[in-house]
Image (cartoon, rainbow over all chains, first blue to last red; front, side, top):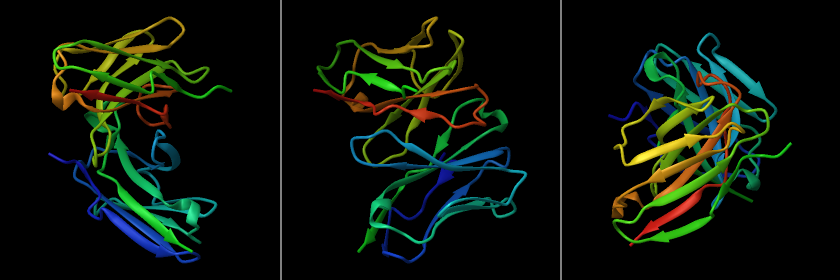
Length: 113
Length: 114
């Protein structure tokens, strides 16, 4: 049972444009959501998070939006840069999950110059 | 501030053997979590240790076991290795155990079981 889903395995965007990565979840008890970026041969790097009491959190070029009624979150990267090319994972925690993070399958972002 | 480190980087074992993976937490972090990442998948939670006690376990068999030491470093032990255990093993440390804070990941150990 996949509680966190990223339905797009890959996304290609032109440099300078907006990248939008999507994530859906099924467990309404989740109350904290995170985005991680992963380069090959490295561990995931934390990007940005959002609590379920908010619907938006912004940090520089990165903004996360949370729609609790739709059980959907998205990560916006504006403007996209070639260095943003990586695999992006969304993760969720809270409710009866204790301290564990439940990850989606990842979306590979390619930003072309 | 030293980040999360893991050793070894790569490891090759044969089916039935045992393996120990090590993790050094980020300074000041008392919680460590271990994840298994298969190719093309997101990390899957194995278990978490908080102040040397197991504090939650994912859907992994008992042959996956762990330890956390007083300095908050940690080990993951896997007995009776199976081919499907081939994966990237990640540890992550955090300031607290609720899951509502950043978990900082190490670079991982790539385990290959032949």
